[in-house]
Structures are given as C-alpha cells and as structure tokens.
Image 1 (cartoon, rainbow, N blue to C red):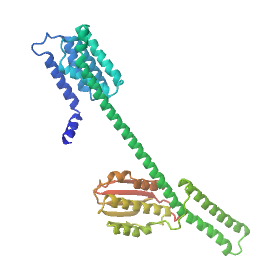
Image 2 (cartoon, one colour):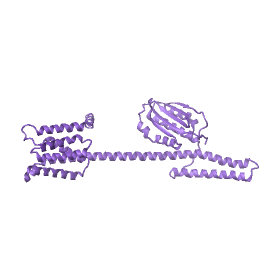
Image 3 (cartoon, one colour):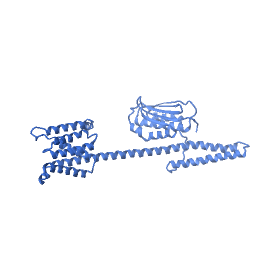
Length: 388
C-alpha cells in the first residue's frame, strides 16, 4: 500500500510529464544517431524529436499532445528504415492519451491507428503483401494494447465521476429531507407558542364581555368579534400545521415549549450523561420573545448533543448574551475540533440549528474554534422584543 501511494505521488507530480517526456526524447535521439545506423536524415530525425518531445505537455494538453505524438511517430515509421523503440513508446502513449480522453470510440480509434500503421508501412517499405502483414504486426498489437489500457482508465474515471455525482445528489436529498423535517418540527413548536397567545386573546375578550358591566353594545360586539377572530386564527394555524407536516394530523401537545429558564435542567441532563458544562446568561434588557427563547434553547440542546457524540469528555461552555440588536448564543467545547467534523458540519442537527436561526432572520456558524475545540455561534435578532 505504501509503495502504491509513493508511485501515485510520483506520477501526480507536476514535473513528472515534462521530465519523462524529455528523457524519452533524449533516448530517441540517442537511438537515432548511434554509430552503425544509416546516414543522418533531417526529416525522420525531426519526426522522432517531435513525437517524443510532444509528450512533455501531455499533462496540460493531453489530446493535442497525443495527436502530435501519434502522427509524428507514424511519419517517422514511414521515413526511417527502423523506428527507434522510444518513438514506438511515444506513439503508443499518444494512442493511450486519445483513448483515455475518449476522443473517438475505442473501436474506431483502434481501426484508425492500425490503418495508419499499415499506410505508413506501405509508404516506407512498399506494398509487398507479406511485408504489409508482418512488418506492422508487433506495433499494431502495441497500439491495440494502448487503446485497451486507455479505455480502461477512462471507464474507471467515469465510474468514479458518476459515483461522486450520485453521492453528492444523495447528500443533497438527505439535507433537503432533514431541513423539511426540521421545518415541520419548528412549525409544530411555533404553533404551540402562537396558539397559547391567541387562545389567551380569545379567552380574555370573551371574559371581558361578562366581567365588565355597562359595556356599550358596540364594544360588546367588538370584543365578541375579537374572540371569534382569535378562534378562527387558531383553526387556521392548525390547518397550516397539518399542511407543513405533510397532511399527517397529529394531536396538539399541551406541554409548554421550553425557554431559557429551562436551561438549568437541560445542563443537568448533560452532566448526568458524564459531560462537563458551564453556563453564563446575561439576561439584561427587555424580555425576549418566546420564539427567540425557544430557538436559543433548541440550539443549545442540539449543540450539547453534538458535543456528547463527537467530543465525549470535553468541557462545554454556553454563553448567551445580547449584542446590539441580536441575542448571541455561543457554545464551545475543548475537544479536538476535528473529531466528527464532517458530521458536525453537515449533519441533520446543524441543519436544524441553521433553519431555526434563519427563521428569525439570524445566522449560525459552526466549525473548529481558533482557541481549540469546536464552536457553534448563533445570532438571533431581538430588535423590538416582545413576550409572545
């Protein structure tokens, strides 16, 4: 495994293509001009140099480099009595490049390569039938092998690309489903919050008509209309909730939604599971809207769950304080900062936290903390705070 990694690192180096191309060109020149060979001729020598030197740029320009290498190698084969082995290697490499990048169908590429080889044989050595068959046989087998290897590499890369595309689409679908599920959960919680306030409006409006004496008829009718409108709004809220939950009607809960006052109990549960946690809440200022408190509570709850899952044994600090027009919810731990980072960064819990912050027009960031560990920071707008 180590040797294969070293080989992959070597072939992936930016210098690999230029260096090997230059070495191949040097070897071809040495073969071409070695003593005992026929007299030097410029045309075949130029083809030898071009065929091998073109491979220097095969990483940056694979298709043009492959075409030049193949054509120049065939010309050298036609012009020279004997083709250097280095040029044969350059021609096979060029065919491999064309097959790896699927310039044309591999079957057609094979036919064209063999036909070009036969044509170069006839042009350089005559059209004697036996020679036309035997001379290009070995080079033709080499070209066909190069096409097969190039096609195999192309198929493997295409399979990897399709797999990566399918995986990315699957992750996108899962993220969309997680966001949809979290929106439905948020809708249910907001229903409970808003329904409580609207029902109080209805009750108080109806009660006022009976407890306040000598109300003018118009005022009494107005209060009754307020009560009717409030109850109609409750029914519409329930209908909207049903739609958001995918038309699956579920009973409305009666338990109150959690607020920041319930953080002590939440932190006690975290400590009972073996986690250490510290809490600081700066509650100066006007009361927060219930939806803001609910969102802050849920963000802290999910962040503590992530800390237990991905940084067991880490100490968690929870700080909640106003900053300008925002409520800042900051949860940090002193874990490794990278353990479970992929899950912390793209998991369904973080999707839910972001949905809650976005619902209020706020923002949420999560990632390794500059001081070590992992940090979740939410900013929830609280301008014009009211108790819902």
